[in-house]
Length: 302
Ligand SMILES: [Zn+2]
Image (cartoon, rainbow, N blue to C red):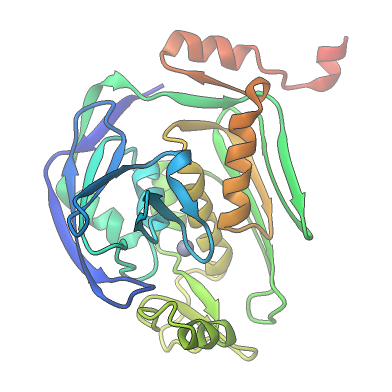
């Protein structure tokens, strides 16, 4: 169990909104312990605290909102905050979307490292998965099962010869995230992007912030950043989606062909199943909860 953290000082950036195509200014600012992650929209003079209830749309990207005020494309920033253990932060926005930057988490890692990180006094609560929770839907599958660490096993299977089948298994921690996941960019099929832009969506999308693929290869001139960049980006997205619980995670997340929508359903399913998890807030209760986990079903029977 670790202590909560926030930024040492405020840091600013600007970029393009993926969906609006408009310029967005963003400022990441330190916040007191137990604040959580708060977005503040200057346009609407409204604060939105990130929670499972704040997620209102999971098509294409994750959108949070309150009433009719919405903030879009939060997932890459949220994934970075989760992995770098930035628990308390005030995010001020001029615009209604988090800028897409280069389509990965690398610029957010850089900004947070530039701001510096400080430890606070309160413990960070953790959710311990005690029983498996699964969802199967349209040939897709997601599950959370008990594990002492936060692990992800992700498989994709695209009906496209360039993306195809990829699988990756990883323990999610700050080091692994920065090295193995943070640089993986958003990707899309050329035909989908043409369709989206014809319908006034993904207006800010370009080869500067997405890997675009057709039947023959990658349209971008610069090469892939990882050989299996596609599955790595799906892991990045999943970390962002699971992070909205506002808790450290002890459990293994398994996904086959998942996306924001299914990830979000899984989080809701877990929270609904009170016997499937325990939230711990201090080292003693964490130790007791982990020791009570049944690791070997055969042993448990005997
Ligand atoms: Zn993404």
